[in-house]
Image 1 (tube, rainbow, N blue to C red):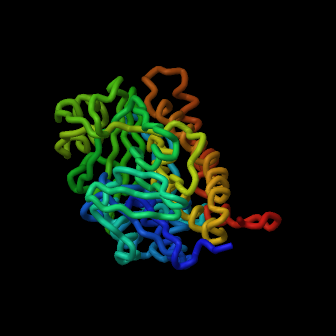
Image 2: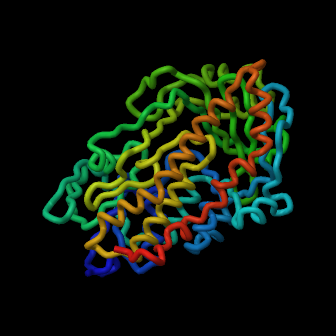
Image 3: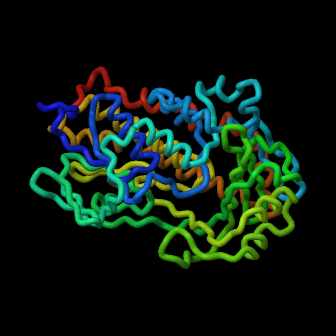
Amino acid sequence: MAHIGRPNLRIAIVGGGIGGLTLALALRQRGIEADVYEQAPQLTEIGAAVALSANATRELRRLGVLDTIAAASTEPSELIHRSWQDGRRIAAFPVHHGLAYQNRFGAPYFGIHRADLQKALGGALAGAGLHLGHRLVGMSEHGEALRLDFANGQSVEADLVIGADGVRSLVRRYVTGGEDAIYSGTSAFRGIVPVDRLPSLPDPQAIQFWMGPDAHLLHYAIGGRGQDVNFFAVVEGPAAWPHPTWQAPVTQDEALAAFRGWHPAVSEMIGAVEHTVRWGLFTVRPLLNWSRGRAVILGDAAHAMVPHHGQGANTTIEDAITLAEMLSHGSIGGIEQLLSRFQGLRRARTRKIQRSSRVTNDLLHLPDGSPAIADRDRRVSRFPEDFGWIHAFDALASAQPSPTVSAA
């Protein structure tokens, strides 16, 4: 039976974001070539920054790109949870201090601009098999192959299609028959601010959660010198999402009003950016199937989640490594069974993180006087113990074939 790594096997990855590029690199490391089809005319990431935890950085180290990523990153000094109004420290844990995080989880925690992360991944790929300006508009069976039709008029056929095309995935529609992303009922304001414009900010090199009534602010330093702060300010509402895309117009006053009365550091951060849009936070309902025939989805296409554990990009990298490792042991004749096993390996973990992220939203948004605040404070004080299972995970180890079951 033909091995998946045979030269004439056609693998198409739809989406040239973090997941698609990581997968292409991981496949190439294993001697398997793939073509990546990205809709954008240039390789650029939408969004401000991403936090990379050990479950991702250990895999990026294995891919040989972590040194490049580290040079453009900041490792937070601490993880701090604060009260919204007086800035009181509720809980704090060392991260870079004493290399506490790396010693516990075996790999670093980095804050990095998304563009810098994508540049590192794209640079390692060096353009091999990358096709820009290819927006997928149609997908159909064509004999034993799958046909992909693009908006630029081109079409290709592939023996295996991997959808790394995000929360509004067209490949997911093919796989599931039309499962759409769901608005979470929350939205966010975001931005990047130079540290020197935030005189009221305590511990600017830390990753910090400011928790308050119906809102929270997350921020962390990025850049090779920690010179900028990336923030993500989440609020309840609007009740229904008013726009066909994940961005909706907003005024500066609306952004400022959502955090009026908060600590001056929060007000400075929100006010330092000109807000013209707010970002709807969308999720994907837990799916029954991640694959159909020789098509499979991963990352946000399969399990988009609210970002309150910062695990969207990290679980996407896990998916990519897991699938690449499984494919390296597989054969084309058993591809459908392999994709089913991939789903089996990944679905329970990503569902657990999805659920936990949603619960965390509610904990971060408790009103003053709520009887649940004491329990929340106890829970954030146990962050390493309660959530270490996320960071300690080893995707490569999880994907090793069972010694008692031969790979198809």
